[in-house]
Amino acid sequence: MDDLFFAGVAGQADAVRSGAVSSRELVAATLDRIGRLDGRLNAFTTVLADAALAEADARDAATGERGPLHGVPVAIKEELDVAGTVTTFGGRANSTPVAADGEVVRRLREAGAVIVGKTNMPEFGQWPFTESAAHGTSRNPWDLGRSTGGSSGGTAAAVAAGLVPAALGGDGGGSIRIPAACCGLFGLKPQRGRVSSAPHPHLWWALGTAGPLTRSVLDSALVYDAIRGVHPGDRFRADDPATSFVEAVGREPGRLRIGWSTKPAVLGVRPHPEHVAVVREVASVLARLGHDVDEVDPAYPDVNTAFVPQFLGGVRSEAELLEHPELMERRTRQTVRLGAWVTPRVVEWAMRQGEKAAVRANRVFESCDVLLTPTIAPRPAAVGVLDGAGTIRASLRSMPMIAYTAMWNVTGNPAASVPAGIGADGLPLAVQLVGRTADETTLLSLSAQLEAELPWAHRRPPGC
Image 1: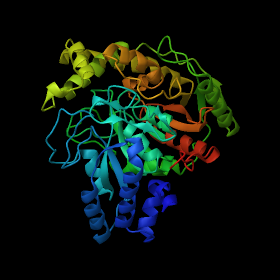
Image 2: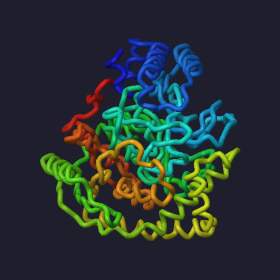
Image 3: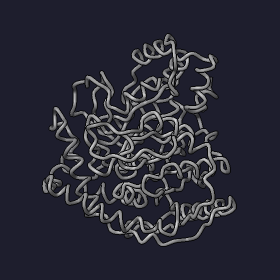
Image 4: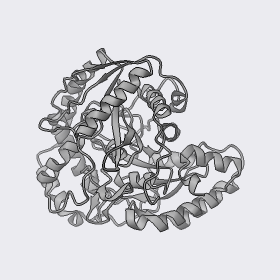
């Protein structure tokens, strides 16, 4: 069974489909593994053991056509609604379970997945470090003294340690890509409007989107094909891709123009030397694979006037959903106070600034099809980054982590963190691939080509 824990979504779905294992056997083994390993990782905030076993039994008893994720256990980040559980947003200020699944969770179940629990995050996903006063700190399976990144850090820890083959996260400034980079996973932030935010009209206005973290590119495509698509209540909508994401993974990307750069989009940030080196190494691999690869200057626009109001407005809009706002973390209360000036009119203005910045940022794609950069500037930090920090200090500590990612939340472009080896400290290395507007399929094809050349999904953290 140990090999099956690391077989990914595709491998576990095949095992259930072939009858090699029943969904109940797989889910029961998953719950046992969570019980044995999560005490040191703190990936999960809630484990839905009884409900998951009942759901697995229903999958085994089902007749007729089965969905692509039939019988496969998955986990859900705390900011997403799962029927019968409290949507905590990473804190303790809500207490009433929600009555219905959010749209992405509903679609996962429709595809046959079994929901086994919810994963840890910093309150409201404000920080790229998963440290919560209510739920504790999630720890990196590769080194328990290091951060998982964030805000989807519990999600990343659960997948990296083989507790589940996939788990949903969210990305409002890098929160899928950053923990993917820290924990050695594939993490694609899709085009804005690709994945529904229902029952909410948006996730941090124009910045955020939900999506999976997985071991492989194919696993990500399988989950995205199950959850993507708009809902009538969504504020943002992306046109359907020309092919399914799974089809994109299975095809050659063709000869692409790939521009690479290690220049951060945030002033005053310097990338770690290993991150500069790995971008150059991946650029060489891509050139060897037949792509036209050149160093470029992305000429990043300043996006602070677009990002900061939406960040503050996003936190304030989620704070309005709380039953007991007085129970928010001290730092979160400070964020809410600091954002008092962010009225709806200011948010709308900030989104218009983001649209202008997107025009400038996308000029890089006049000379290339894909942009290659580091995913994060520093190596994964020691746990406790947020200890004693208020909003301003926490923001300053966060800047190097989002120096390559937040730009593409403002513009809405798809971007993926792709594993690229192991650093001298024993922790994963990663690069970021950024695509043209709504061009996830090219990123998936190229990422799959890199995965075939530089396999990573077989790697297991020590002790897992």
